[in-house]
Image (cartoon, one colour):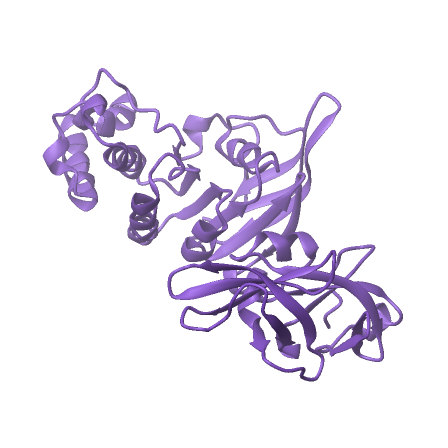
Length: 356
């Protein structure tokens, strides 16, 4: 079922939390609301769930406006960051509680609980209570409680944030598989861009209550709409340098870097910021066309790669990602080479992309 958000606004008194959010989440897709703490993503999710009132705008499930529907009438299921399990109940009763409240026959509840428990591989835990479970097991129970209801829309509010790093990696794949098994529309909230990139069909990047960009993971990574998206998406983070655009080149000091296709109407004579990811740079032993000279100030081993920090002036530094077996040492004089097709260009004042 499609979820349509039409000019959604939310305020608490004089404080504006969400501003004209206008989005469509296509049926059966995994859509992530991504952004830093305080950007309004959880508030938006709670409004979809019916747990928060809308100040202005409309939410539609398919073609039906659901603004005034109670949460129980929306056929949704929600998984919270805190799991929200009933501590006095066994796993079996936690899983089936939502169905029992709906007066579902006992035989149907038992069948649904057994089916979901097998899918989640927690069928051996059905007679335990939450206090006897690990964090990962509790998370699976919370997911299972939502799955037994076969919802049209599956809502998840940072469900992996309480897990350790190794388990988060495992559960990312599991959540994606659960989504495909459920065949429901999934709306997922996180501040972790790696979660969003690996799990989502579509990502809405949010900042200060405004949707900055909505698109596929590839779109937001390769074609960021503005400086915020460019800096928020990608690890290690993108490098930024200020300068001026002249004649299809970016001038910084004495260096002139060739640029990819620009929106010439916007870019002529612009004070600009270029962005380039560390993995799209190279270290050169001698000067090349458009390269910048600098000195190595830090080398970090990341496993199969090294992250090399290069000071190109007193106030500017660039991070370059190279192979782990690259021979580079502290204090070494190097040149940083740019791949023109991988450079992003933003207007310094508006912070919007200048790429055509």
